[in-house]
Amino acid sequence: MNALSITALQKTYAGNVRALKGISFDVKEGDFFALLGPNGAGKSTAIGIISCLVNKTSGTVKIFDKDIETESHITKKMVGLVPQEFNFNIFEKVLDIVVNQAGYYGIDRKSATEKAEHFLSKLDLWHKRDVQSQTLSGGMKRKLMIARALVHEPQLLILDEPTAGVDVETRREMWDFMTELNGKGTTIILTTHYLEEAEKLCRNVAIIDKGDIIENTSIKELLSTLESETYILLTSGNMDDIQAVEGYEIVKLGDSALKLELSKDQELNDVMLHLNKQGIKIKSVRSKSNKLEELFLSLVRKK
Figure 1: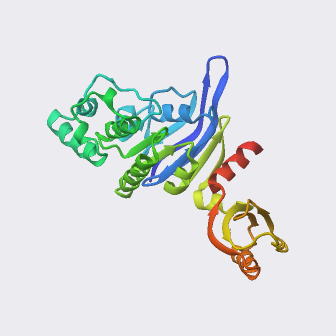
Figure 2 (figure 1 turned 30 degrees about the vertical axis):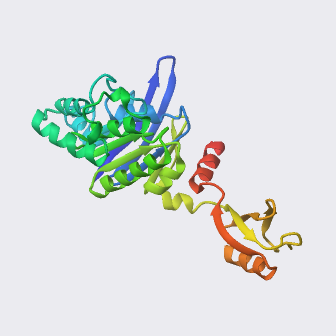
Figure 3 (figure 1 turned 45 degrees about the vertical axis):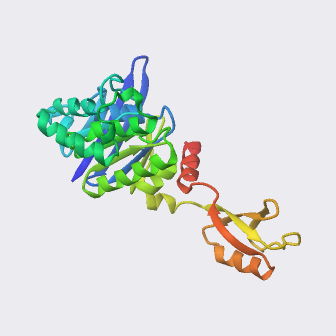
């Protein structure tokens, strides 16, 4: 079953601004799905429509086979949304924010408090339950919004740039939590500008640009289309008289590093073997940039 099915979805705002031009894609139940695109591409409009916060112009959207237009009373309970911007009462206590959210879904206060304790504990916020939300750090506020979105235990969770502005440690903690949540069956749709995040977490991806879907495939298949990849080699040994390796593009970066570009049919081991024969040892190898980022930029530029 599909957790989400979008068919020929269009949205035109006042002034004939076409935010969505008839997009179609599916998200399978249990998937961890990336919805990517530059600013102004139409991601937020699509999310708003899925969440019943924005009215569509035409097309259909179904959540677990339920139409959001004719069965919105059902689909709203199936979806949890973590928006980009903080949108809770900053003077309200952390626990109250989550418990009161549960009330909108008809959950009694005792059950709501138990669910709130569970998710706040999982997100390392339970010790902050009685403080005003305005006192939380940026990362804690992000976690609070996730707990609030999960309190009614939705089948589909939409995360709109959930780690924007948080520190590296908090981001990793959130990655672990999202992976665990998805592993237990929650379908997750992620939008992010940290493309390393999408590459690490997601299995499938749709890329939207200027209101159109320009790519819709698995992360694995998308990455396989890369024509080349750039590596940085940290070295030891005398590179003053380094010799060219035929067929390979190698550039010196100071006295202890090389930049190497490999095409699909070239092997990193071949280069390392040639360098080793010249007395140059490779201490470490890293990719110069995120692979998905390179593809994303090339696709958007083509469009």
